[in-house]
Amino acid sequence: MSDYPFKVSVVVPSFNRGHLLARTLPTYLQDDVGELILVDDCSSDDTQKVVAELQKTYPQIKYLRNEKNSKQPYSKNRGIMEAKGEFIYFGDDDSILLSNSISLLLAALEKENADFAGARALYMGNYCPTDEQSILAYEKWQRDKNVISPDKVARILPFESHFNAWINRRAETPYLHACLLCKQACAKQILFDTNYTGCAYREETDFCLRAVFKGLKLVYEPSAVQINLPQKFVRSTGAHTGGRDKWLKSALDCNRYFFDKNWEKIVEHFSLEISKEKMLLETEKDIRSIAKQKINVLKELLKKIYFRTVVLTRYREK
Image 1 (tube, rainbow, N blue to C red):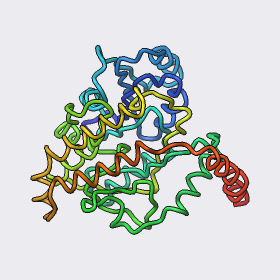
Image 2 (image 1 turned 60 degrees about the horizontal axis):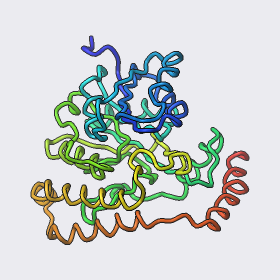
Image 3 (image 1 turned 135 degrees about the vertical axis):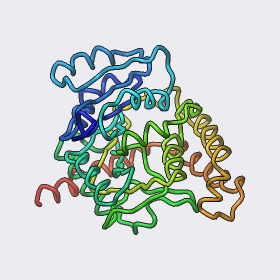
């Protein structure tokens, strides 16, 4: 007989995303989920009121509020220590989890004898509608256009990942994206590093690599899917609070902290022959590239037309 009252606890840190929670939180309440712990990082919006209303329909939702804004790693750790499930899934307040994803991740852990299992992470563009049919069409479209070999999902050298990609089988990886399921005992043993502040860039990579250094096994399960809602819904909230420049500075600081902290173990574990400064230079280029991305109105319009006339049409015909 299990020592746990249920299989899965979902932990969702949140900050000023009250306008999204009614849309996102219910998607995490899938089979085997006994509780969803929403950790409110001292929001100044109506998050508490929204959650209270949701609890009337979904009593599995538990609400915790930090006394002060303490950032994602702290909030996740608080959720971990509160969790009662055998496994913990880390969700995002601006993302939806496709049906059956929790079951797929649990199956991946069992079949691969793994400790962590990560879902595929997709990011919907502003050109995408967010009704159920459009979301499913978007997922199928992305699956067909982003096919890679399993060894390229997450790499150390070059330090890059493709957690939006489809592969033809599960793959063991050195680290995972934020949307992952792990054994509760492992999460409590490792915990997130609260030195990652601001946008907390690299916090999940740090968490996962420390698990690998302890001999734990991580797998990527592409059939499980978490989809981030379009940026137009997110607005300047969560990690985006303060705008692009603030995000960039925070991401660069967190990236350097990550490599300063973990470099010796990374080199030893993965037998690297590259300097830390060169690795920093390469990863900082990627971060700056992300920060410079701007919305091209014409391209967005063309994508919108293509999505509605081609992607949705093909999906409906099938």
